[in-house]
Image 1 (cartoon, rainbow, N blue to C red):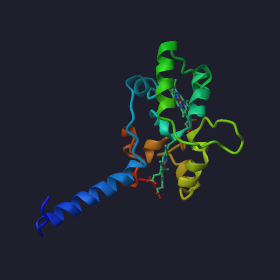
Image 2 (image 1 turned 180 degrees about the vertical axis):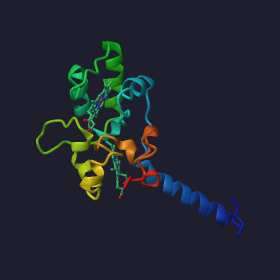
Image 3 (image 1 turned 45 degrees about the vertical axis):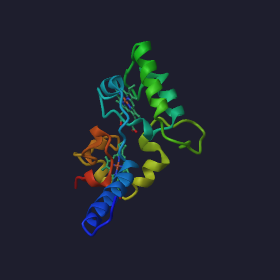
Image 4 (image 1 turned 90 degrees about the vertical axis):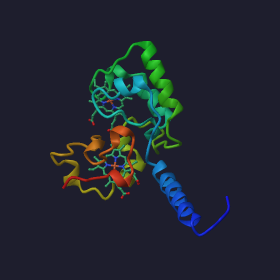
Length: 155
Ligand code: HEC
Ligand code: HEC
């Protein structure tokens, strides 16, 4: 490309957009699987696989009949497809100090750290009810977007 004064704004715009998408990329999770979306999104948000390590998903997928007090059982084929998807896209080394896999995203250290500024009264407010209700604040959570841009914390 031959550089002229005219191309500078274009180059700057491209640079800015690649920088902002690189940043957003850290908190926008695009991996998807139709069975995961349907089955794991039936009762709550289909939580992105990146938010827990593989060992947590593995532990969760072997006890779906006792899933946080609910029965989320699936047939063997569907369960193994979803489990493979979750493990393939799982987050990095987020093992907890206890050495036991954490089943709740909301109990991981990174979650508590990212959310330490959210006051207790907001967590229990009627609009939120519980921390696992991500979409109460992350308005684009359904699309895997947890970036600051789409964040609206109810008062
Ligand atoms: C029959 C309803 C139902 C289905 C289907 C279901 N879940 Fe859940 N899930 C629940 C309930 C109830 C909770 C606990 C909600 C709470 O107390 O926050 C929960 C909580 C969770 C949490 C912890 C949220 C937190 O606090 O961090 C994860 C992770 C999760 N489910 C993943 C899955 C996956 C993966 C699937 C698909 C294999 C799935 N769920 C399918 C009912 C369901
Ligand atoms: C009560 C509102 C609220 C709820 C509910 C909530 N969050 Fe957040 N979340 C926040 C706030 C506030 C931040 C901090 C943004 C900042 O200061 O960078 C945040 C930050 C994040 C970040 C880091 C984003 C970034 O750009 O730094 C991720 C990822 C995230 N939340 C995921 C989740 C998930 C997953 C759930 C549900 C299991 C959830 N959050 C539930 C309010 C909430």
